[in-house]
Image 1 (cartoon, rainbow, N blue to C red):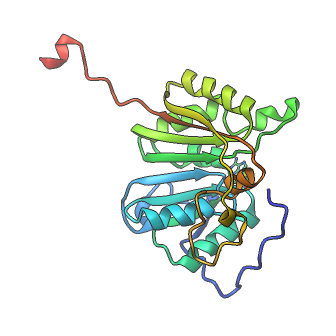
Image 2: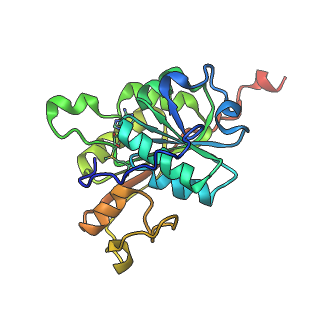
Length: 236
Ligand SMILES: C[S@@+](CC[C@H](N)C(=O)[O-])C[C@H]1O[C@@H](n2cnc3c(N)ncnc32)[C@H](O)[C@@H]1O
């Protein structure tokens, strides 16, 4: 993902509770084992260097945030960031998000799912590796609560349009969609002081796109609330 080497992680940092291996996750899912409470759960698929998890967990202490990251170095790095912050409501799973959704999460569990800049797999023969695919959207639909939302962003317009069609086919409502080209403020080019929220962007890739003046395509999809029963026999 990144071009620069990751900063070294302090070997003394205790990552217990912040870094979970896929194999260690409680089966069946048990929020109390991971967060020591039950609270609305938000999941980030492909959490990269953990910028979103750090910001969101501080901004919304009443929600829990679980990142899922397949690359061990990024999972480890973001768990270390969370441990340094000492937030009690965020953790990272090292594993494949597709498996976590298929094997760990029960139905109607998740409040919100965030998918920011998933790998585009440009080559046609590699497209089947994209995270946004029919089988994953079926698991996403099953595991979201009715009324729960998916926030999806990408800089690849074709991936965006293909994904919108797949979400619609999967039964999701498209609540909002837009493309955004925002010029970076001067502060965005500056290094971020330790522990401070970055100005105006919420993921590492969003910052990168902003600095390169690349448009970002964003959408929010919702799992519909159950329709009230219109059948006369339901009302007795
Ligand atoms: C382009 S990066 C974006 C990272 C972050 N969301 C951001 O906006 O800065 C995509 C990330 O998704 C991770 N990833 C790719 N496939 C994955 C999967 N199946 N499960 C979990 N993480 C995955 C990659 O390792 C990488 O860190």
